[in-house]
Image (cartoon, rainbow, N blue to C red; front, side, top):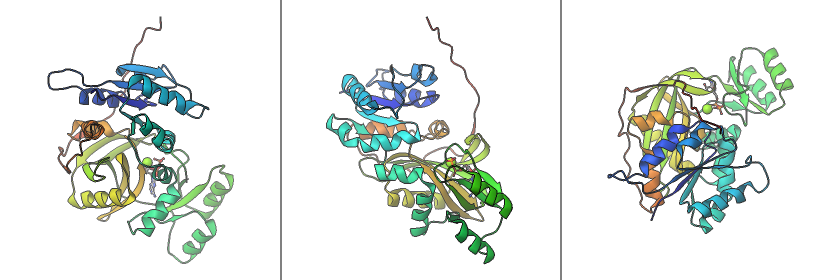
Length: 329
Ligand SMILES: Nc1ncnc2c1ncn2[C@@H]1O[C@H](COP(=O)(O)OP(=O)(O)O)[C@@H](O)[C@H]1O
Ligand SMILES: [Mg+2]
């Protein structure tokens, strides 16, 4: 039987679609499944990489999930995933409906997706489970109390509790500026210890059958631009492998996740998790961390064996622009 993968909100993630197509091609070059893409815009370039494209309503519109379920039935879809954060919880919420028609939601549970969207919740979990993380405050009074007691110092890092794409983040040096920021913001902000160190990204796959971490890829971020990693280099460290493996399994993730970590003075601080393919995933794939194959195995009922650190190190990734040209006739 064919394995058909539906990728939602594909946007500009062309390579993710190409990699899925490769994973659904056998040794003789014959296709063993289709990749179907959706987006709310027909000007999302990645949809033209797919075997089939459906233009769908905005995910917040009534009836959206029924449109997706209908596509699954019509195309005999085996597994579905999304590439954008707000849609992860929605898919998880309806995972039973998908399962009823034989479709696996490639992703974590509803509670876990929601915890990842809420950076305060994530901090509370990390602290409770004694993982190194940046000291974080949501209550200004408690922050000032700790500041007076010397438990935290300026500069601090201020960011929205439910932020994304590095929007509305600031490094704050003074009480006056902090007060002004907190008073003028229309979204809930949190105050965090400023972490000075090497930023790291980890692409991790948690087997959907065994629930074990089966693949990890670590990179040092060299240049960041507009909230994305622009240049990075792969590396390996057994201590980091162990930390991430323990964390991912204890938190209960499932499928693909992307973790932000800081390294300072030999300690790895866990910062945030996006439980999906991150924008920098092509770096992992090109170095040998082929998570599309792991997904296809899982969709076929095969559990993957752990294979940690089987990738090339010292490999650099540099992003650049590409264009797609289409005739609109
Ligand atoms: N505590 C911190 N200290 C210093 N820099 C930080 C801190 N937290 C986040 N950053 C920087 O801000 C960026 C965005 O923050 P992050 O928590 O990853 O939110 P998101 O990616 O959802 O916007 C990070 O990639 C990192 O460069
Ligand atoms: Mg981030």
